[in-house]
Image 1 (cartoon, rainbow, N blue to C red):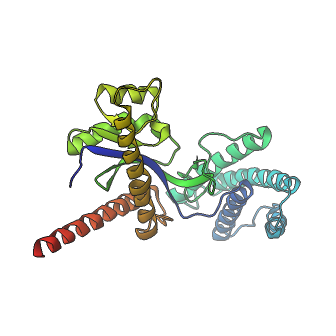
Image 2 (spheres, rainbow, N blue to C red; image 1 turned 180 degrees about the vertical axis):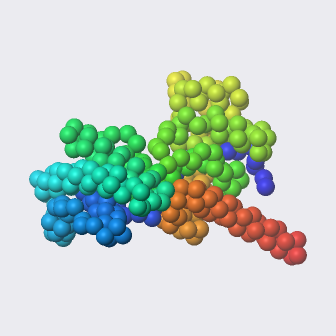
Image 3 (tube, rainbow, N blue to C red; image 1 turned 30 degrees about the vertical axis):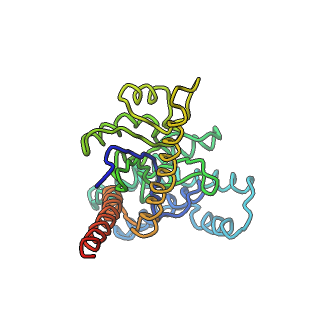
Length: 311
């Protein structure tokens, strides 16, 4: 490796494989799961299924989903009906669990899903009443750890998956911070420099997006004698031409080499849509995807080096 004193930094989102979430879809999935669990319990114990409006709401939901254009009035009506039905099914399942406590033992996964659905009901009810979004919102029953991450991009404003703050040294990417919750990557610069120093020693040049150019980060880089690509504040210095030339080169490296590596990992190393079913497997999938891409880059360099020696 060469140029280990130059660090590039940026954040990206590795999306998970899931259907696009809407409130109506999430509520219907909760209702459908609750009803089928109740039906299985009643069938096992040979008792009659309690009455509910499930079949009626099922037909109305399918009619609603077939519509190409879903009006706000219809969406509000479906949401209200599904909230009422979900609340009723919650109460019926609680009664069944008490009634059949000595006859049937449900697995831990059942109680975990019930806990998630209760939280979904509380969140959706609050959103329906206030009309405002809430923090820590669940968007999937099977992947309750996934949160909406607003990226503000033109093509895709909201992404669903893990947000990763990455540093790059000589074309190799390293994970500095990974979270399924949204976070401000601009506050991670100091820890990123510390990680780079632990791995490769002294850092003299740094290139990052404009979100990292806070006053605190600027002061830190100045104190550590790190040259950055941040846009200058205030009056130009004595060596402004040289500083701008270095800044242009750093910007080119970050915008082409680093962002290009994100695209390579997503397109060629199975990180475009991660198909893992659990949080731990999804983190492991991202880790192996990024470092497999690093190994491929190193292998190409070693091969080129041997070819030069042979020639």
